[in-house]
Every structure is written in structure tokens, then in C-alpha cells.
Image 1: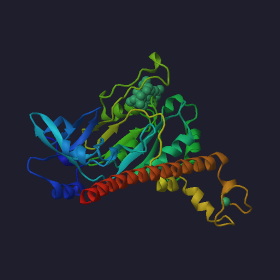
Image 2: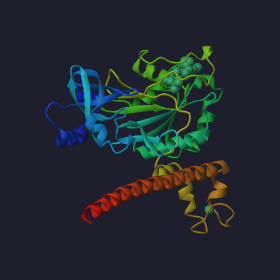
Image 3: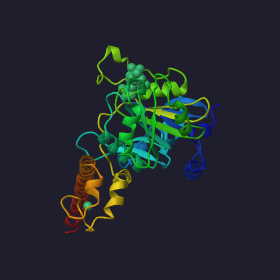
Image 4: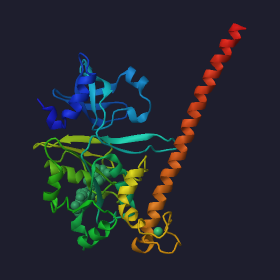
Length: 349
Ligand SMILES: Nc1nc2c(ncn2[C@@H]2O[C@H](COP(=O)(O)OP(=O)(O)OP(=O)(O)O)[C@@H](O)[C@H]2O)c(=O)[nH]1
Ligand SMILES: [Mg+2]
Ligand SMILES: [Zn+2]
């Protein structure tokens, strides 16, 4: 029998649970999300579950559906589970869903730390890290940068210093999942009651790190010799694992690009240095372009400043599209009401 606390259950969830629980409901944590169903784990083990019809009808949008890491209420029916409700999330890592829609996709919920993994041999990109960090700060979880494959990099410290310059306030760890270098320090994020997720591009070594931390080969990894570096994804589903010593790890498939979702504050955190310096610009509304007495332009590299602007524009664009979507939704509602009114008056005539 598994103790819920070993899965990350605590007084926050307990309190919400008591306000919604109904006879026959059991608390479970979403361990894996497949196409139409979920694997959920509770005190009595793991089962497959789907959302109930009622849940589907009352879900206001995609983000209301269960995500890996969520705590949910299930009732079980002959070995299969029906998800009745999702408990409020303490943290959530979101992105804009792929495609043209303006939907929030919750990648994982209720994580304490997000380990953004990159590889020191080819993947290292300050610009990509800024994007990740904006989303992670916004999630409410602690951002941590993990620079993996130190064994393949001639000068890992130098590379780490470069990344540190664009990650104020973020812990950075140089590790090698091949040799185990740097793993003692990673242990500090993991422990009883804690949940940690690994995110990053495909092939950077997320699953290899998970395997080493779990001390077993639960996750299959990609054999780089038999495929090119940017080839297929080894991991295809987000998946939660319990560590023997307590604590929960979540592995995720590599993502090509992380489109921001509602990360205004996350952006400010990520570019905290720009905000701090801007207070010293001569003009209060300084755009840090050609204004005299600008404190930001010279102190911050041009590419970091451009990256900040780009991400800001992206969020503004998203805001406008969400407004437009909300307006057309509102129009639909008015149309229906007007139609109903017309019928109503017609009938009275
Ligand atoms: N030399 C070296 N190779 C590593 C290290 N970590 C991982 N690898 C190798 O990198 C390849 C990709 O590792 P994976 O763990 O599958 O990468 P991933 O991030 O899980 O990839 P996706 O599941 O596709 O997102 C495998 O061949 C690993 O053996 C490391 O620290 N050093
Ligand atoms: Mg993987
Ligand atoms: Zn300025």
C-alpha cells in the first residue's frame, strides 16, 4: 500500500478534498496522460481512468482537463476509473497549445521544482533558456537549470558562466548522467513529499537523468549512435515516477519550442536585471533604444535585450488574440439571446 503523502499529498489537497468528496470517491494522482485516457495512482495502486461525461461537459476549456501531476477524485468501476474532479493546482507549468488556437495547455501540475535540462555539447542556447525560465517562473515552481553531458564538453564551467549571465536568481548545475558527476547536488531538490519535473529539448538526456536518479532503467532512452542527434523522440508520454526513498519525478517528451502562455510576471522575473537597471535610466518611459542616459543598453547585451522584446511582443500578441476570442464568444452569446428574444416577442404578437 502506498501512502498518499509519499505521492505528494499534503494539507493543501486534504482541505480541498474534504470540501468536494462524495461517497465512492478516492484521491489519486495522475501518473501518465495518454491520448484519451490517464494512468492514475492512489493508495491501492495504479489504474486506467477516463474523465466522466459530466466532467467533460462542465470543463470550460482544455486547461480544466487533468494533467500529469494533478490530484483527482476517481470512482472505480470494475478496474477502470472515472475521473470526477480535479483538485485546485498549487503550481502549473503551461504553454500555448500548438496550432492556431489560443488554448492553455497545462504540461504538468503540482510540481515543486522544474529542472530545465540542456546538453552542454550542442543544445546550449541562452535564448531558449530565457523562454523556459519565463514559463517556469510563471508556474510557481522553483526554476533550476541542469547542464548535462559535462563529459562531452571541454570547458563546462565556462559554458555555465555564460548561461548564468542570463539566469539571475536561478541555481545552475553542471552534471553528467553518463558519469554521475554533479548528481549529489541534484538530490537536494528531491525528497519525501516533493515533486520534480524535467523539461527540455529531445536528446538532452532527461530520461537518462531520471534513470540514474531512480537507480534503474525504467525509462528507455535514445541510442544516439543509431540515430541522428535531432531524430525521433525517445519519450512520448509525460510520466510520473516514485523514488524508493520518497519524492516524485516526472519525465516529459522533448519539446521543440515552448510557446509562452500568460507569462507576464515570469518574464519580469527572468529579466529581473533589465527591470532593476531601467530604474536608473534618465527617462521613466525609456525604451532602451536611442535615448540618452539609458542604463540598460550598455549593461545588457543587445541579444538579451532583443530576446526580452521578442518575448514581450509574443505575449502582447497572445493577449490580443485572447481578447478577440473572448469577444467573438460574447458575440455568439448575444446572437443567441437576441434570437431567443425575437422568438419570444413573435410569439406574443
Ligand atoms: N555522453 C553523454 N551522453 C548522455 C548523457 N546523458 C544522456 N546521454 C545520451 O544522450 C542520448 C539521449 O538521452 P535521453 O535520455 O534519451 O534524452 P531525452 O532528453 O530523454 O530525449 P527525449 O525523450 O527524446 O526527449 C542517449 O543516447 C543517452 O545515452 C551524458 O551525460 N553524457
Ligand atoms: Mg526521454
Ligand atoms: Zn533605458
